Length: 263
Image (cartoon, rainbow, N blue to C red; front, side, top):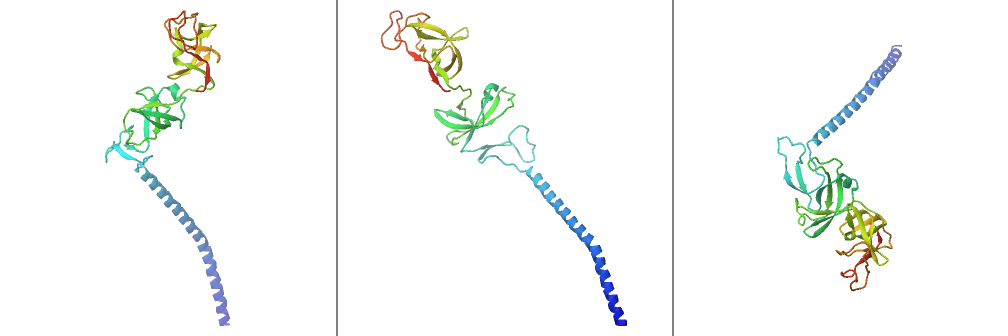
């Protein structure tokens, strides 16, 4: 009887202990795991915060190159609006220029440009078009990356930059020097029935040698491109050939039939 009672008591005691452990350790274990998870998240957040703070003290450059000018000193405040360092990438230089608002509105990033320095030409690409005006010049700053070796195109030099702004497609082109103006109104001399005819025209965009004719001419018209002090409306003229006209003591008049082109 005593042995049986001891056995039963042992089993009851073991069951009670296991049940108590299950009750106590279950929630406790879960709470411990939750606390560890929260602690892990907090540690990760602390790491990210520290990395962010460190990044504020780390200065990185968008390009590789050589530092040619340093505008900051240790323990001194940095001047607002001034570059901390001036870096020169000898494989690709940057040309900065300023344009008016109407020109700025015609430009697009990636557009090609031509840069000339002492008779040498370099290719470039527009990289930055600022839409805020420079208060000193009243113009809009534009930057272009120029494919030039730094030894050939030194920093700080002045260059001549050319690029396309306005364009016209399928336009009538004539020599720029063939156009005359009377009180701001453009006209040319054409040949009609063997005589010079003063012909009013409306012009468009132009460059150093050509100008677009918007209206007033057709591709079949012959435009007189040679200037003469006696050239006037109704004067007999002769196109082509050689010699002089009887009425005008000038060499033969060159003409230019209206040409269609693309600008």
